[in-house]
Image (tube, rainbow, N blue to C red):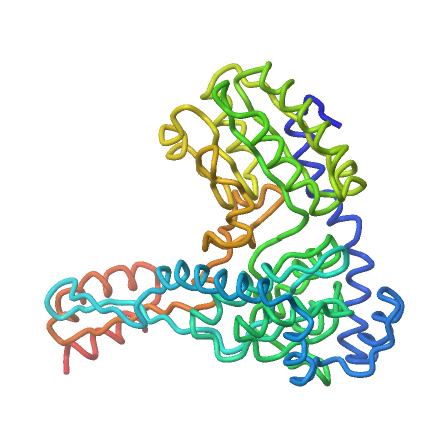
Length: 416
């Protein structure tokens, strides 16, 4: 349950399942491509045991969901939406900015929101209204015109309320790889989207990776994970609590403690075992802890390098001098600093986004934010004065490359 880890083996194990399921996911994608809604109905019956009478969730059902959700929870979701929106508003860039670089040459960037995006919200073992908020609020803030969501049936009323609070336009009761294929390719009921975001199981993640030629995706976002960087000053109970919080997500979740203090690792292990025995989702926790454990580093430099090599989805820094560490971290989805920065705060209400790259992909991708939902185009405004200033450079390089028409397109303007 709590063991010393070989970090390279741990990282490799986080990605291996994708290759295992790609064949079956490819078959699902091709079925959706050729058969559309019929495949969604068939696979929903097979995987979820539900006969779909209608794929889209009607407005009346979305409105009625409020009657089934505790008023205090609704208020909490509204407050979370406000905090998440406020933080993501800070990420919005200017729709257009222009800067005169020199006389006659003005350059800039035009930012345009995507027209239609799809969000995937997992279901199954639990309702995830927080993910509904996290996937869709940045799109709304960015100015995306149409936001749709797919989530496995039966759709939990809590999820419907969260999607309504976030301002989602369409909700479909379809899950798994077939939902990703439907959004990317389009079916009779689900118009295709330009981009798909959101976490899911290994089948969902594989489908996103395989459909990148059809729709842009955010990044691979699979089972949850946490790395905790701690020294001897850290509170072992707090660390164990964070480990259990990630472990209860999914049997494939994983946790790793990287510490300079071997005694801390042992104490945390004892706390993890105690808490796991008392956990309400103890079966899930027990399986997740099979992928979890600790690494004892020789010093803080080695600990930082180890964590950076992991590229964790969540990174908790619990050391005496965290600011000296945070600037040295290059790869992490979201960073939580200090003993009171529980990862659960970012999951729900601090305002940051909890849709993050997993399995080491934080070394390649950033977590979900407003920029994921925009296109950026460079702009150049050049006058005759500006053309004369750079004309010789353009013509000389174009001729050297043998692209003489390029050079002539500038010469003809300068001769005019």
